[in-house]
Length: 141
Image 1 (cartoon, rainbow, N blue to C red):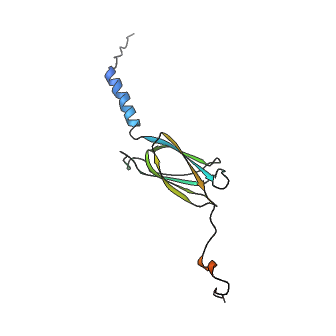
Image 2 (image 1 turned 90 degrees about the horizontal axis):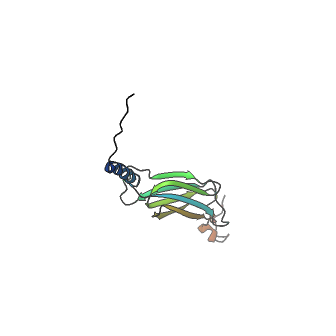
Image 3 (image 1 turned 135 degrees about the horizontal axis):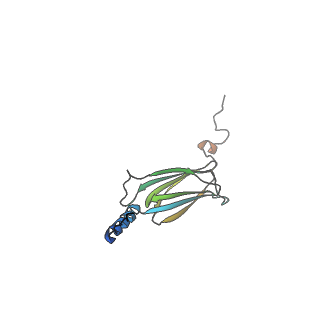
């Protein structure tokens, strides 16, 4: 039986492979983003709220090669997690039934961030007709 001789891999080549893998995975500084949606009145979680996250810009980020929009819904605890989003500026928009729509811009600078959003109930409708006295309102036929 013939023995097979294995050549040792030069240490420099092994180091280069690991350095390249580390550089490729750290091409962009990424953030694990958690959005928590609560009711401003009660502090309770809002489940099934639509959460839209749009990446706006960041340092050294090629927008053509990454996902820049995420649309999802909160779970029963009112949370949604986006596992990897480039650090930089993002817009978070939240839409939920029986609540006012929310939208704001956030800066992501850490490896993991949680943004807590408190949704308000809709305000009562207001119109100029409410200011007029009943006598001055036009009569309907």
